[in-house]
Length: 116
Length: 111
Image 1 (cartoon, helix red, strand yellow):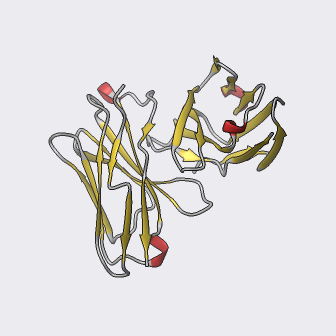
Image 2 (cartoon, each protein chain N blue to C red):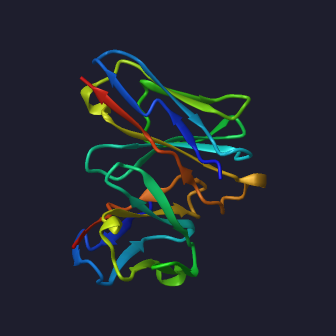
Image 3 (cartoon, each protein chain N blue to C red):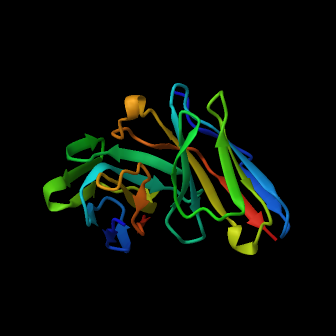
């Protein structure tokens, strides 16, 4: 079965640089979520999109932005990177057809971002 | 926001032993998922279980929504079961579909 695809899998950046993470949800899934997991921490919700519209916002810094495109893939843009942004970034997708919330979130393999 | 507490925080098992992991949550939930995070960082879905009981091989889970807890049972543990087990919930009263994770239970299975 197709899974969530994330690219790149690993990314190394310098402080103050920008980074773009990409997510391709499971086919026919209409909702995409982004989570950030710092070292030794649990994943924290950043932002979500339902049918290409932002549906929910968590603890996402103002330096970060995200969008979902017409083909349902999503991108997380991170600017002015800081050392504390080093983390594992997960994308998840679900099929919330008709607005139902009762659907499993399937997680991608993650992008490991290291800021030097 | 909703609080999710997992216990125990750490667990060391001899291969072949059984274990029970617990997840308590502070409010009603639409969604409850158990994940296994392997040493490479991948989050593997184990169960979607907002209520009731499910089994998958050596793993089973039970959620008692009225009492706001869920249990994950691991039987005949293997070294490949090592990793961190997370419980995550979606708060039905918050109008939000985000998952809130517990701090996890770190399981080490030794030969």
